[in-house]
Amino acid sequence: MGRRRQSREIALQALYIVDTSRTDPKEAFAIVNRRGESDDQQVLAFAQTLLSGALECRPELDKHIEDTAENWALSRMAAVDRNVLRLAAYELLYRLDTPVNVIIDEAIEIARKYSTEESTRFINGILDKIKEQRPRPNGRPAQDPS
Image 1 (tube, rainbow, N blue to C red):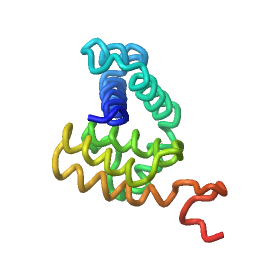
Image 2 (cartoon, rainbow, N blue to C red; image 1 turned 90 degrees about the vertical axis):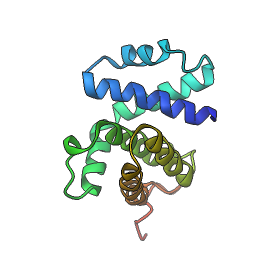
Image 3 (cartoon, one colour; image 1 turned 120 degrees about the horizontal axis):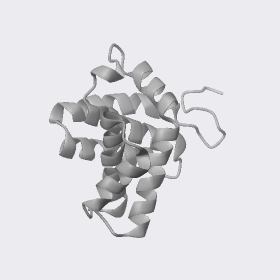
Image 4 (cartoon, rainbow, N blue to C red; image 1 turned 45 degrees about the vertical axis):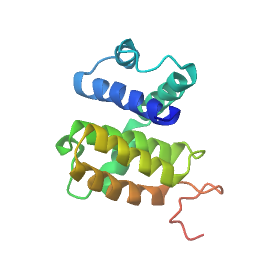
């Protein structure tokens, strides 16, 4: 498994704990790391960046996800799925250093590992729409015709 995938999985696990048990993010990150997922400092640093970013931007991310997932409230989504979506949406909208296809492929593979095959199609459909909101180098969303 690649380092970035490992980081994403660690961030997902911590985000899931925060989301489902209202645990403090630092404690959730520590819980995940007690299991010894990685001792690679670069992996852990990127995981922490993803977790912090997704939590900091959570209201905006949740709005993007709910606006895109027509007729699906976040509360109705499986906890794993909504947190995979939050992490991937965070990368799509705020981490412009990672290619779109990599972000979506990683989210689908992580969903396949932690959720269901149906979830992969659901997540792919939502992220495919959210990627249209990704800022271009000029700062405008991809769908902006100007």
